[in-house]
Length: 324
Image (cartoon, rainbow, N blue to C red; front, side, top):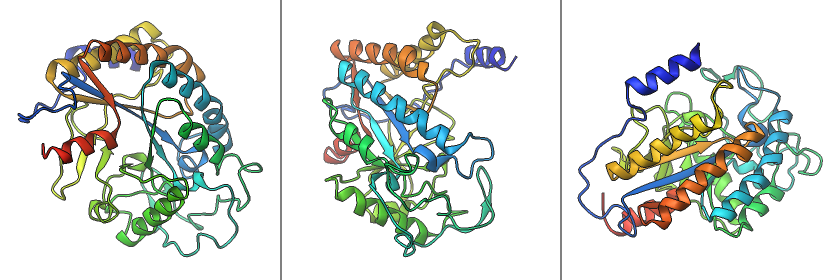
């Protein structure tokens, strides 16, 4: 029933919706007609430990670990760069009790996640990646960085916190960003962008302090939009459709038609669509659905109609050319 209602709503409202803009400058590096960004929320067990609905963190992490090498092979084949929004703790090979005690903790809250007792880091095993694969991932980060098509590694906070003004004091996100930046720098990574965990947007002033120039933001009224500046001056890349199997009743062909429509809409509107996914999703998302999407992106790019890049690349282009 829900799947049919979703189909009807999609048709009646001509989804996905486009935010039309008044940008008159050349929007994309080679004057392409439209653009696409894809980002992956790379979290392993950190995203689901306080979830009210999600599965076991180890199960979630195991599926993600299985899928990431498959995803990277497709990205190499079609020469597609994406944004890997990475929880900072995953950069660690190991840690021990007390290593994170300097970090200020997020207060208790009960919204989309339930954190009402204990310590925010209670899940941390304080061991290493070989013994506790759900909480560390230097092996996977190495694979991402060694991908033949250069990828962007972005910030997703250090421990997957709620970033909202309501639940996160500025000193908490300040420490989260410090920890993430420090550990990423050991890998030679300089963060340019951030994806808010769970769509919990906020604390933009602190992000700017740490030189984050662009953020992916969810829960807007449109899914196709050129980046814009918010009132704090940071660039916002609105979150577009999620790459997922959605409903089991939907065929791969029907699903692909929805992503193709979003890409074509971005081209026709002179705009940009920002797809995203969790690497922990069903394996068939990445063996059956994703390759078709990437192939279509590569085709449109070859035709000169489509720019395909990352948040860091588009923010650098916008800022260097003073477009916004």
